[in-house]
Figure 1: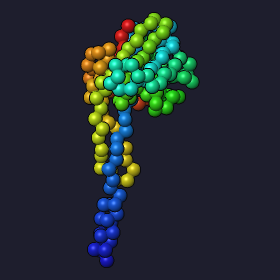
Figure 2 (figure 1 turned 45 degrees about the vertical axis):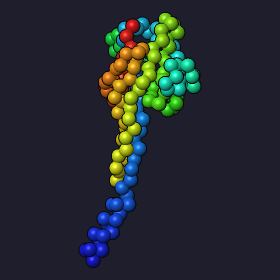
Figure 3 (figure 1 turned 90 degrees about the horizontal axis):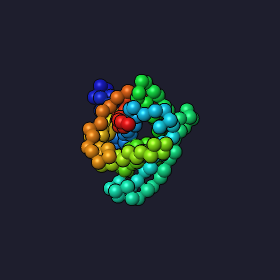
Figure 4 (figure 1 turned 180 degrees about the vertical axis):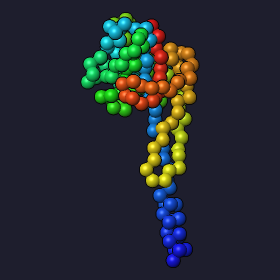
Length: 164
């Protein structure tokens, strides 16, 4: 009886084990030293990766209205959560190149060469995992991103600092 029960439990564990493809992370822009009027409207452009920002795939306009984007300011630093209403296609994510354009001051910040190797995890039951972002290029310069608190969301994520 004990052997049969042990056999059933072991086979249940073996069949519940599965490979899980980890979620793709996103990058949250942090604006440092900008006036609120500089960043009250932000245009995010999504490009096919590796096309030198020549193959535009999508454009989204975000304003500082709470229903459009999450703005959180502390001192001279504003975190803008662009992904709140827009869904995954508007996240700043690996797999594409991005431009963040501030029309009020005619500034474009480019984000490309996002290195985020896809990994897989063994999983028993309900599981969740996320890939890491090793680096990206911001305006042509390699950046190793930090993970930090995202005030508006209350979670932790990858941050991209944009200085005035």
